[in-house]
Length: 470
View 1 (cartoon, one colour):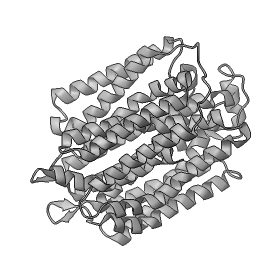
View 2: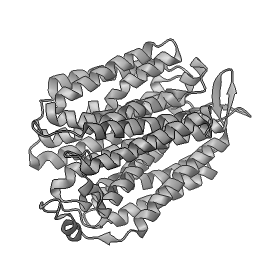
View 3: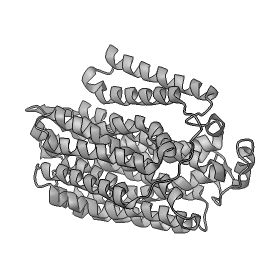
C-alpha cells in the first residue's frame, strides 16, 4: 500500500510546500512545480501499461520507482528553479505507479481475495487524506520546503525497497500480441503538447501564434490517434468498446468526477496556505498545520460519505448515488466560490463539497463496471485511468492559468488574488454541473441491457453492477 499511497501523500505535501518554493526561487511559474509530474506521467500511461503486461509489472514498477528516487533527490538538492523542475519531471515517472498496482492485485491475489485487496488499497487513501496534511504541517514550518522534499525522496526510496523485496513478479499476458506504437506516440505527444500549451498560455499570450500553434498541433495529433485506432490491429482503446454510448459516457463522466475531486482539493490547499498580504496576495495565510486541523472536518466528511455510499450500493443503484454526489459537490464548490474568506465559511462549504466528492469517488468505478461485460472490465478500467490522468492535467493547467491571470508579481514571485480563487472554484462547480447534466439527461440502462449491447464485442457475462449510465 505504501508505494501506491505515497503518490497521494506526495501530492498533499507538495501542495503545502508550493508557497515556500515560489517565494524562495522568486518565480511566477509555480504552476510547473505541480503540473510537470502530470505532463510526464500522462503520456507514459499507454506505454507503461503495455510494458507491464509484456515484461511483468514488478519489473516496470522498479524502473519507474527508481527514476522517481533519482528525480526526488535532484529536486530536494536543487539550487535553482530549473533544476527543481527537472527533478520533479524525472519524478513524474513514478506517477504512473497506480496504473500498475491495481492491475497487479488482479494478477497476484486469488480471485476470491481480489475485491477485498483492491478495496483495502483504495480505502487506505482515506488514511492518507487524514494523516497527510498533519505530516505536511510537521514538515513545513513557515516557508521552509526542503524537509518536505527530502521526506518525499526518502519515502520513494523506501517504496523502491518494498517493491524489490515484497512484490513478486506478475504473469506476462501478451507475449505474442502487438502494440499500436503509432497510436501511442500520437496520443502521448498530443496530450503532452496540449497540457504544455495550457500551462504556458498565460505567459505566451492566449492569442499568440505560439499558443495557437501548440494547441493546433495537439489537436492534429489527437485526431490522428482517433483515425489510427480504427484500423490498428492492437488498439490502445478498442473502438468497439469506446464507441458504445453507455461505455463512453460512463468512463468519461467517472474520470471527470475523479479528476475534479483530486484537483479541486489541490487548489483549496493553495487558497489556505498562500500568504495573506492586503492588495498583493489573497490567500488565507494559514500554516500547514492549521490547515490540517481545520481540514480534518471535511476530510472526515469525504471518507464517511464514501463509506456510506459503498454500503448503500448494496441496496441502491449507483446512478442515483452518483447523481446525488455530483449535485452536492456542485453546490459545495459553487457556494465556496462566494464564501471562502474565513475559516467557518471554508469549513462549511468544504464539508458539503467533500460529502459529494466522497460519493462520486466511491460510485464512479461502479458505473464503469455496470456498462461493460466482465471480459471488458480490464480495458474499461484502463481507459478510466488514462482519462482521469488526462482530465487532472487539463483541470490543473486551466486552473493555474486562471490564477496566473489574476495575480500580482512582487520581487519575482507571483501571488494570487481573490478573483482568481473565486473563478477556479466556480469553474470546478461548472465542470461538475456539466457532468451532472450529462449524467442526468442520459437514460439509464440495466446491466442486462448493457450486456446485450456488448454481445458483439464480448460473450462474457455481466458483472453485478446494477444500473449504469448510458
